[in-house]
Amino acid sequence: MSETFAERLKGLIEDAGMSVSGASKAAGVDRATLRKLLDGTNQQPSIKTLDGLSSLFNVSRDWLMTGDGENETPSAHFAPPPQTAPATPSARDIAIRGTVSASYSQGAPSEETETIGTVPPPPALASISGIYALYVEGRSMEPQFFPGDLIFLNPSRPPRVNDCVVVITDHGTGPQRTLGILDAEDAENIRLHKHTREGSNGLTITIPKKFVKARHKVLSTNEMFGA
Figure (spheres, rainbow, N blue to C red):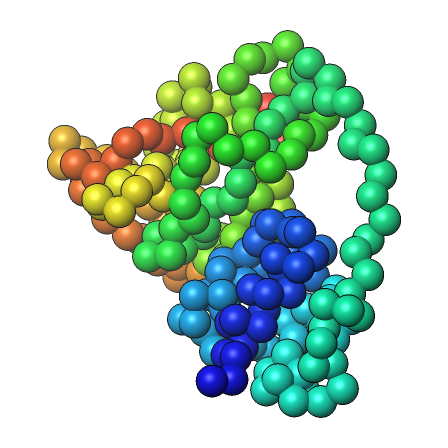
């Protein structure tokens, strides 16, 4: 039986010794998109995605899509990027704990102990403990946040209405993160506003509080840089 696109892609990532997160960043592909390609949810990658993956792994687009062509043994053609010794993180560096989805229905998995990297703290955050960072996935918070933007959060600072927040929910399948503007809340529900696309009126979603595990405030530019 011939390999599927997902199997070929998974083999390339494993042969290269890369994580899904590392492959998505190196190829310039959104991690949620790569995850869907690997589990077969999405079997029609865009030309941009194909170009990024084929360039990263040094295989042809035709081979990646069909298994046919000159790259039938791709692992022999892949040359991993040169390894450099990682810089020693500073004690003040802020942990990057993965991603947050701008979409509630496709929220990014939340692993509170996961650290995929570190980043030096913005000036006003250097002496504050507990701060962490996330990469944004999805487009429903544009133009405030774009895919790949890095946001900083302070779990100890209670969010107020109109603050940007990351809401961590669990519907029984594990915790997930979603990003939005805290629009309102009552005893039963939290309402989050999404910008969606430019020119629309946005979208407000209601999340029952019984599914909400935490709400973490996203810090503004003024709060990060002391402006």
